[in-house]
Figure 1 (cartoon, rainbow, N blue to C red):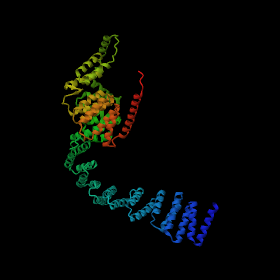
Figure 2: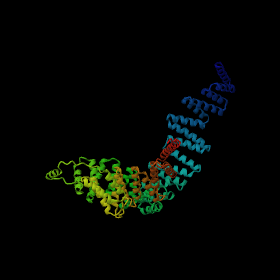
Figure 3: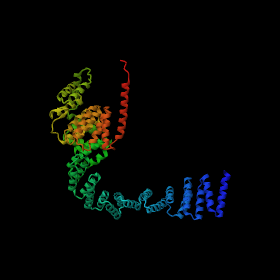
Figure 4: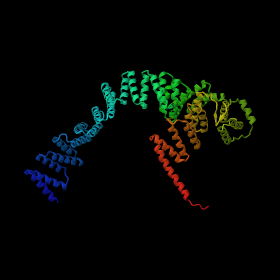
Length: 619
């Protein structure tokens, strides 16, 4: 075998020396059937050159270069590709191969040069898609090359895709704007609008440009055009309201928002925009009215930073509702330093308003954070005496008399848990007088029980406001600040695990139309924490029945309802609701994960049922 290969090589060389190129080529090709060799391909290519057959020569040079490349001899491959280009300057596969090899070596300039030549070649051949692919590859190597970006946009236009071209032109204009090249930015925004007169990104970009040039009226006009072509785009609407405020065209913004909110008046997004408008006008009360619900939703979702960003604008007002929510944020973020400062601020405000009970609660929490703060301890003692929660310290003479009267009698403390449970039951049923009666019996036996004393005081204040149904007073005279206090108290009770107390507070707040939905949801969540899933399901179903289908919060309530069904082991119902949510919004929260869990639980449940049915009873 070896001798035959050597013989073939010798004969191929002899044919070449004699100028018998066809015979030499045939001999080398026969050798290729035995052993594929890049050098043989190259030799055949040289022989075709001598014959004057350029096309055949190029074919074998490419085969030689490809073989060298696959074997890892990149320098040799590059030499052969260049040799090919000396014969055919725009040989596409050689150009692409050289571009790729230079890119692999990190020599970006050379890589781009060969890619551009390849793009020029196939562009002349009318292959637009392939040309776009090459330009996109070049952009991967030189992301800031504006000329390449423009070439791609031009190609989209030539392909009959003006919208795509316009978006690319607008992106180029935005890049120039970042470089403060105003003229080029305007030029490309103009190209975009010329390609697609409804190109929203261009109008937004021109609005931004006008703002940078301190031309508020021009900025407003461009934003208005963008909104005209995309009135459902919330980013565009936000931009419009922002420039309307700067251009003092606030009424225009209000008119647009009023039209858009007719179908979804409770949409939190629109409330935010209205809130921003009222802030620009200095109408802080109206701004708070609009943004309060948004802030409460963010607090409920524990989105502390976004809630703070909205709330921060109202810090200077020093109002109780603002301070209460700041405290909730600082608690959530475990920022004890800021929490302590805000607790003290709010305690002083309550003290100034004569709200001793609220001030005391805040001072007690502050004492937990600052156990060595003697001034806070003094405040607590002061308010406990004021509210008769603590008896004055007796004099030595009084103390001696008390000891003598007491004698040596052994006083034992009774556990009143059963009585307190019974009292709570009566309270939940609205039987306040009966509940007070039980608490008074406990207090008679245990006069120093501050918790019971507070409970009696709370129930008496409730009873004075009118008849109570299911723990809710029918009195409609509660003002906004009282609702705020009850809502904050409910949140605090919930965070501390005092769920029955939290439910009572939220039931009171539910009478406020502005907070009815949020409070009802909180009541359901409290029942969920208690493990009373049937009550949670009932609350959430009732809430859904009262909400319009267009309300964006419907999905959130349905999500919680499905969770309640799941925890109540009603897997089919939970799966049904989760699936319904997914048809509306496939990316909503962790739906896919929940559905997978439910399917597994459902299969497990079915398996258990089958096992039970297959069991034989011997009874």
